[in-house]
Length: 331
Ligand code: PHE
Image 1 (cartoon, rainbow, N blue to C red):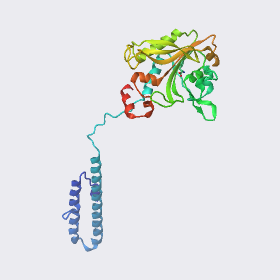
Image 2 (image 1 turned 180 degrees about the horizontal axis):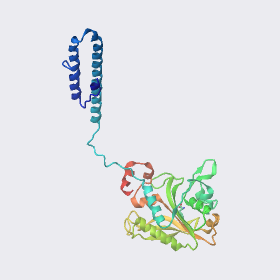
Image 3 (image 1 turned 90 degrees about the vertical axis):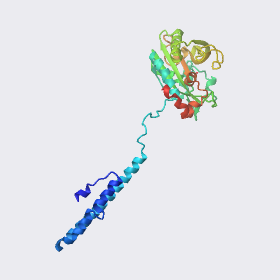
Image 4 (image 1 turned 45 degrees about the vertical axis):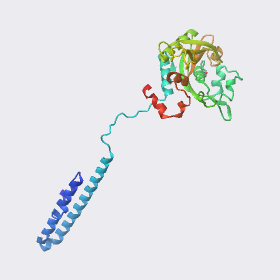
């Protein structure tokens, strides 16, 4: 009995051999049946019961082995053991994340720390504290998304709101870099979107000058676009900086000679900047007779377009894996 319970087999042929050995015409069970004749009459009943038990046990065991062998054989047939495990297809970071990390990295090496703020903001942090007059066109519904029923609650239209939040909680020296998503009420096309991403920088201390700003931006441009990159600053206007400027870099595709990418000017615009307007310092609780500062802001999509020549802004939010997969190597 114990012998039958421990029978094993790996293949269908081995199971068949066991069946013949125990249950076949000349098998052990039949041998016992043949000897039954010689069993003394008074023991016939007990021996008969035992032989039948043995036969049932053997049948059950062999049936179980048959099933085991059949299932392992089909399971191995479904697994392709010769298939290689590598390379496993890895995901890629989003191109905007790659470029954002690169920008933040460059500025953190220059001593800037990361600051972030809410995307749903109030008018004060986005506009009033940043010296926007009450009738400034940027406050218009054409530009700003309002949260329904709350004329004061809006989706931030620039990351300058984070500057305000940092200034209201800290006294100089302040040196922060603020990346984040911003929203503007624009029709979606290849060149505009209702949301995009910015990185803003703010530095406030005693004796901060325009020269400091220019030096930091030159350093950034060279680390981002290559050692031979030139910069130029053109006068501009922002409510929160005075003086204000826009910065161009020498076109890194043609090296400044002029091509279709830079519209044959040799320069491409990459950011806005300027000295923080004293009115902004005062509005945010910083003494403008003691401190000065600079600020700059850039669109991450724009920098990414310059680096990777992405022609259509919509590609960044469509999640087409064929597009996203192209950035695996840049991770
Ligand atoms: N906030 C400005 C914009 O959204 C960019 C900027 C930031 C300009 C800081 C100057 C200084 O266009």
